[in-house]
Amino acid sequence: MRRVGAASLLALPIALLSGCVSFGFACPAIGYGSTAHIVLQDPRPGLRLELCDGEGCTPGTVMEPTEIGATAEPVDTGIHLLEGDSASGWSAGMFAGQPVLGYRVTDSAGALVAEGQIAVEWVRIDGDDRCGGNRAAEVVLPA
Image (cartoon, rainbow, N blue to C red; front, side, top):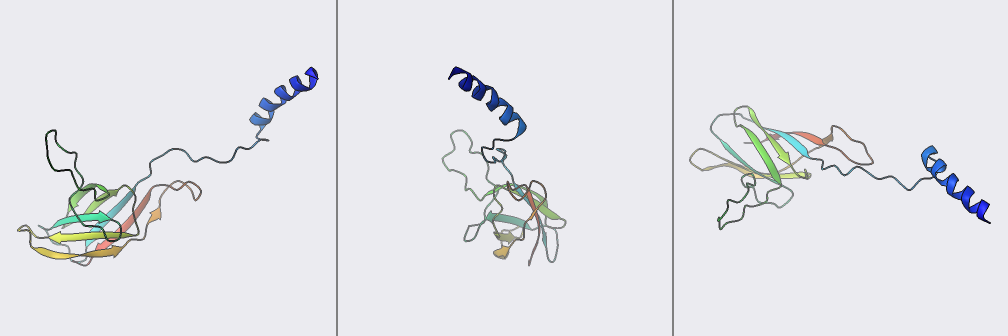
């Protein structure tokens, strides 16, 4: 009986190393993100963009860390980065990258120029079908 038990114990590591035993597939624990390049249909300087990620969301400024002692919590728009300007476009980094973006464009005095929601067609730029990957999109706002 002991010989069978010892032989089984020796066979297990060999089977694992050779790939004969499968425990399923696990994706790496990577936090993928989405980046959108956003331009205005009629680019012009001096306009401000507020975004939010998802249908029915409320556009706002990029979520900022709360200062020590501050009373107001930042609004989570799902956007963690927004760089650029209205003349050349913006680059927006998002935590999820939903199929719809909410937007609001204002002028330097704060007057509303355009707002609404726009469908986004994301393209995976790395990773694979099984585990996902980072995504990118080109978005043109009708403002």
